[in-house]
Image (cartoon, rainbow, N blue to C red; front, side, top):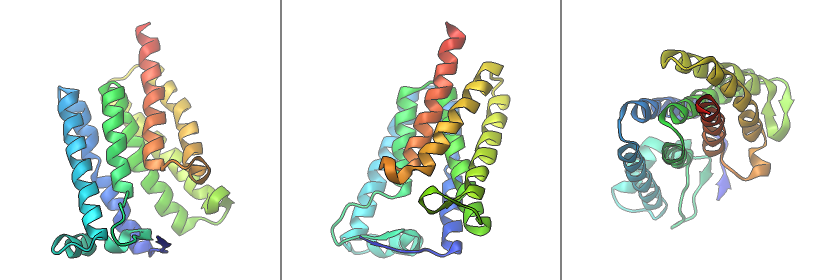
Length: 212
């Protein structure tokens, strides 16, 4: 695959799609049976992977349809017949995993941080980034992730009536989550996947200590 430098407008479209996935937070919290939610995410993940593969295989109808909506937003041009694992696929993988592993309150908070903090980091970093951080990222983007992700998590926890212990757990977890994003290249783990797993674990740990 060859790297592609997408425009800021295409980056904006990518992150708007990212933010549109906030429906997952409501699904995790409001659907009473976690296995129904997990089944929904698994179905969407399978469909996304197959559609992206069809795009790489140049399938009639599916290829031009995918290309029209998402083709210009791909960071890498796929080899013919390759399996594309886009950011959207990693979001669905993370949603599936945190739904299965963590309590709904923890899983919802984890997804909320990833979806909003990642979008803020990318858009602010590309537009206003002046101070270089590791891996060609910017400290402005890092600050945006911490402020927006942390602020959204605080609002989320307040809206569900979480105890103060969870605010502390979330604050502690967002630091290593930010580090996973900053050093994504060295870890070889997509940050759309690593961030929710880390945040969710921190919140779940807070729930365990609360119930101990």
